[in-house]
Length: 173
Length: 100
Length: 349
Image (tube, rainbow over all chains, first blue to last red; front, top):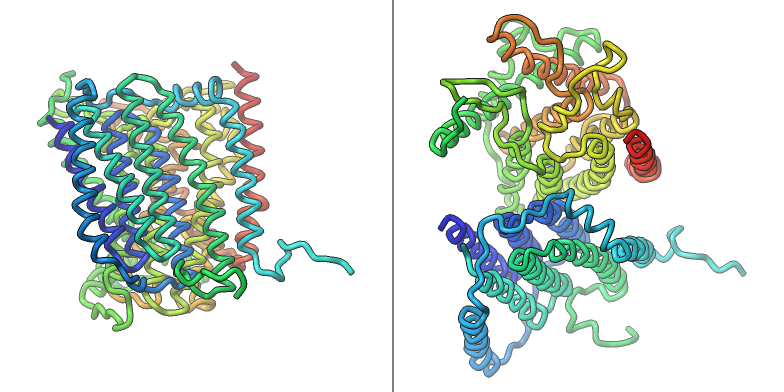
């Protein structure tokens, strides 16, 4: 009962944040509603027992990646978005279409997915066990992603640097 | 006891909002944020299935998704900054010529 | 010892929350008093001495001033974020105190109540997460003020905080390897006992974490925007940085958030490196229950004194020196500390 109530409250906050991201005109409001979505998703992970994943979601996603988004919006001084010319036909066909498709998928999932339930804190994800998995079975993906991050750092520093900064190579005549 | 399908429906709603945002928005940064929303929806799906089948690999995979999303965000925002320097606009409708 | 039932747990937690917040806010006010007195004496003057004996009622006078002052909101700001940013800063500063243990458990009416609001398995990660979210308060304050000094100050403060967060986290990983748990209570309990007879088994001695302690101290000074890393709020360089356009209560909220962060950082340093509440325990039962908390507070006081001492002594770093120090010196040092700690722990076991 407690599990269902908490799931519904934070699920509602997630969906409200997601719809707010679509509806808002200024990118900073969209960014802050995405932060709200990520925070409520962290609570949903906690409800399933994944405590380490929830903590990493807040530290990395909400606390670093979204801060990067907010910084770029502030630096580029992105103003309010101009409304593009929309199509009336797409609105009349699209909104009921999306709702109908969504309801169909939801009905199929609820009735035909085998009726499995998860309890509160179903699979406790302790840092120790996740660490053992990460360094034993998933060692190769771990090392490959660390190289990926290194490449991303180098690429980002180069791409965002000014044309006359020390990060760009100079041609010697 | 919450049925797993409820978590999957929530994940689907988030993914659908991400796709809609990707298609209807004109500001490149908001399009990027819709991609992040899609990735978050998928993460919820992973954790829900990990709880259903009692396999911790689902939670470990969420880490990899987060790392890849962070790397992609960094490079993508760097590209946006580089494009903004020359085009002076963040509206994707106006970045439609190969040469200025 | 009776086990805590749900209503008793809720009542005990509510009482603890109210008590801790009250004590924390009073501690914030009197840390400001301590700073003004200590810096004053270092500069060969008295500090506040008129209001009450030794100026002890000065925080009360400051509080009344902040409440009564006109709360000016300039017309050109982005109003929702302008009002929300100091709230975010204060909320994050006050939330991180919830996982910090202040002592062992005390027994009231037959129930054993631990002196900590909650003891989660991932207590250290909760503090790191709340610190990461606290960057929003600063960055949004700078942007929503719609003024060039505020924007520059906010961006600089935000970039400084996220750079030094990495060094902070890496310095704590050394402690994690030695203690083997994220829970703050278990980290303190792993530091009990003595080695070589009389030296306590604190992480800084037996766990060989003195380099990590140094890195943690530097990163903590940068995270809380204190001298020598306080360029984002330096009056002579940037008017007042991200809190230029704030007045009265909202400015007081930023101030409170900064000092509350200082206290949290000092608490964390004593828990992780100096053995928390371990110290000589003697005497009758009531004294035995209260002495650990007394040692904890004494160690925090030492940290706050060092904070204030450094503030009164050192000049501030220029921004490029600050970022170079964080990325080019502290970050490789933290990784080296991590590798050496892992090797030492593997050799010992």
